[in-house]
Image (cartoon, rainbow, N blue to C red; front, top):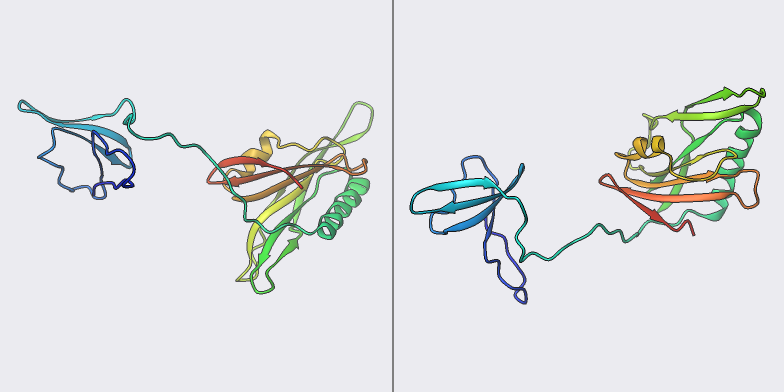
Length: 209
């Protein structure tokens, strides 16, 4: 299968063929061409003295560059909902001095966001001065989620620490597409917010507003 290009773009000097099956015949009438397979880009030649396929060291220079991008169409989380979630985080922080989290689900029938509080385990430690400080938080998606609901994000607290995406947060969220909101400085007014959106393992920092 040959790739197509827009009419107003320059044609590829070295064409690219997509390899979609293992026994796909390769062109015999082209002196040089590329093959794009699931294990990379290959430079192939039909020479008078040989027929070769070598993994390409660079991409065709005729191709234009591209970069990661994100244009959000995500529904906004209502302010009243955020206030309730922050109130829940603050209550947990005052009682147990630990982090807490909630999941955001999309209800397609009502076309609104729902808050789900999953079962969760928070870990804390006691410092040299006897004070308790949070270490981590673990929770899973509830197994009995309504059939037509889908998880679109989560919110968790960093208690009285700053709001940021920690290395553990990033590791946990790599394969969880959607909105990830961190709330910190619960003792401040207002508290701190940090928001990121994850798509296919790529993280995009977004404005919490």
